[in-house]
Length: 192
Ligand code: S6P
Ligand code: ZN
Image (cartoon, rainbow, N blue to C red; front, side, top):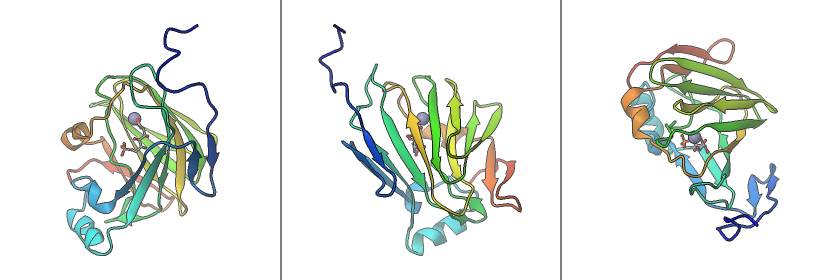
C-alpha cells in the first residue's frame, strides 16, 4: 500500500461536461475579468477603457478537487473568451512556477497559442483540439485565444509547483500576440 494512500483525495474519475463547462466532482473556480489583468496589455488606455466599459470576463479556470500540494497532480480547464484590447489578443496573466516543474496542456476546443519564455528565449506553440503543449521547468507560460470562439484547454501540473505572477510583470513574456491577417501576429514585447 502506498505511504500516501491516506492523503488527501482517493483514486477517482472526474467528468468534464464541455457544454456546461463543469467538472464533477469540482474544486475551486476562478473568474478573471479585465480589471484583474492590470499592467499586462501593451495599450494601457485601451485596457482602462475596457474596464470602464463593463469589465468583461476574459477567462475562467475550473479545477478538479485534487489540491495544489506537493506530490499531488491537480488539473484545471481554462476557457479564454475571444477578443482584443488595443489590438492584443485576449490572454491569461501568465506565470512562472517558482518551484520549477514541468506542466502539460491539452487543447480541447477553439484555437489558441501557448507562449513560453525562459527569460531569454521565447517559444510559441499553436494549440488546437488534441494538441499537447509541454512546458519544461523554468519556462513561464501564457495562453492566448487566437480564434473567434472560446478557447479551452486542460492543464495538468505538479501540485507543489506554485504560481509566480510577479515574474511576468517584471520580465515580460518575450513576445506579444496581436490580432493579425492570419489570426495572430507576434511582435516584440513592449512594456504595458
Ligand atoms: C497552472 C496552469 C493553468 C493556469 C490557467 C490560468 O499551472 O498553468 O491552470 O493557471 O490557465 O492562467 P494564469 O496565468 O492566470 O494562472
Ligand atoms: Zn502553470
